[in-house]
Image 1 (cartoon, rainbow, N blue to C red):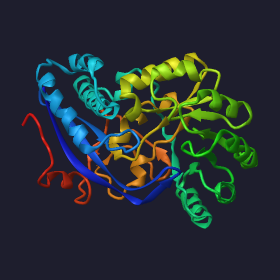
Image 2 (image 1 turned 60 degrees about the horizontal axis):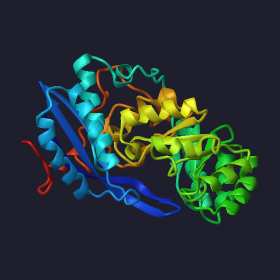
Image 3 (image 1 turned 90 degrees about the vertical axis):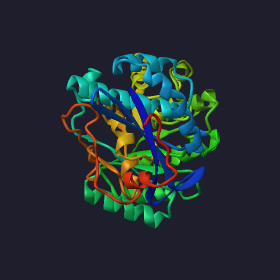
Length: 357
């Protein structure tokens, strides 16, 4: 079994501003696992918040080339990944590539391989960043016209209420999600959520900085809007602190370590009465696709990372009309596009890395 990887840049359609940062592009690394004539792919993206840069990704990959060479089949590699000690994003990409490979070997889409509910065409949210109120309204109007029925609005500045009001005016029937990315204090969160309640918000993610689930519980108890833990919900171990404190948890494969870890968290959360949001980082279709295979398990689906980039090097999950659709083909069901922009073509530039040639 062989592991190789290529690095490339994903450029956003427009800079995405949230309460703690602004992003115009992000680096991505495509991992490829080959075995017995089959090829599985996964993607990991860099993240300042999670302290993950391209050099760290490539070092981790280099450290696993020998271990993959010793694996006899994809199922054995999936078991081997339980001993992985490294960045969760890299584990998620390896885990994705292995599931892609296993699905192809067994002739099953990944969700069937997992015996997860078949994701019927599912509505995804689309993120509106911290932009001027008029721009937020124009974006909401465009998205509704395109078919989006779920919108997510970033929060964390003085225009929060006006921005939500403008979006609601343009999207009177849409489900609205709100995400301050931990940008409010607990008292500020209560006041803002009270002011925003008339705009029928479906859920609010991580209203206060992570690390104080007790304060998060106090905020949740003082608002009728369902509170979803995101940065406070990174692993299975976090669920005990969140049970009874919040309405749900945001499961992102890149932060928990992939499909296997995500399904364990989902199962444990549902046993505890917590609802599930499926989220993602800004990534290509390849990076978002594994979560789409789990979409049948979620109350809220926020899988728009591929829709935010200008030149997606992969295709296969749709979403341009607000609806995600999976092809009923073995593995992930995604394929490279023929673009020559910021995607796979950029991976051929000098200086990118490949191991186990």
